[in-house]
Image (cartoon, rainbow, N blue to C red; front, side):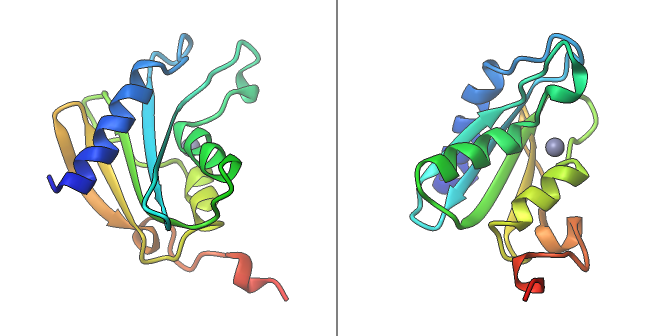
Length: 133
Ligand code: ZN
């Protein structure tokens, strides 16, 4: 793992530890690196009214946007299930709002990197801000 990826992994591990996932028992941590190089992390936040919960990627993106940044250059997600956990469809679209399709998305487990994708691989033929007039 490169030092840059390790930084994102460590941030996702810390966020993962704070996940609020009492219903799914599926805590997730995510980290996004913005164009400035800064890493923003987030966790999933579930709710007793199930549809009101949200994903770790959404939390990380919200932290980035709240800090005034708008470009994602790298994404990392961390889940602890036995199967590799990739971003859900909704999060792929949320990432697309702020990322080029070439942006790498790393899927990690507690042991480290499981597989890397590009956003294009996870969300082919996507609709993004440039599609709008
Ligand atoms: Zn999601």
